[in-house]
Length: 261
Image (cartoon, rainbow, N blue to C red; front, side, top):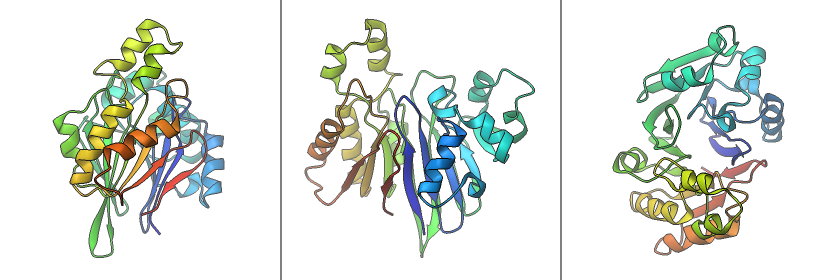
């Protein structure tokens, strides 16, 4: 049965699980291999069943577990070439043996799942989001994943337009960030066009996607210091007030959170 589950979400680590009728993949592996295996066990599967891992970008909260996973499980890891070059400094790294490098815009098929990338504006060597598609009944089911987004732009909207479910960044409440403990330069980075998406900007984006037919959203990559899950959820619900039947979930930092397909 197809499933969409966020295993880990936030600055401490990110990892999302997608299953079609016959194929299981991960998007990012930003916590330890042991933690990922434990979380997968909770939902009834294992790294041994994962056909591929697709990486959004090279930052450690999206890549922490890759080297050990490569050593123990030899799962193919798909990543853009700029991200791979920024991440891997050791030519003897186990990750090199399983790495599948791509141009920033690419499409790859794994089992019955097709994964297509799109550029996400973020301060990394190369950051992408993914559109994941697989057959379900007589139709093609479509999932969007877009975290670490500095701002909303037309290409990103086009890439996510018409997905059935979407994991989307709702990183911070602007007023909490501005009055919070972060140093000024870090606040500037988060608020920059290549930083992270605020609750308000997330609300604007999901309203557009709701008009395209998206019927469920997972709010992800919430800041522990600059956001509250109820605040992010309320902002999203307010933005979707014209669409009362759309489902909204907030990804827990380290507990599997599922959007039912």
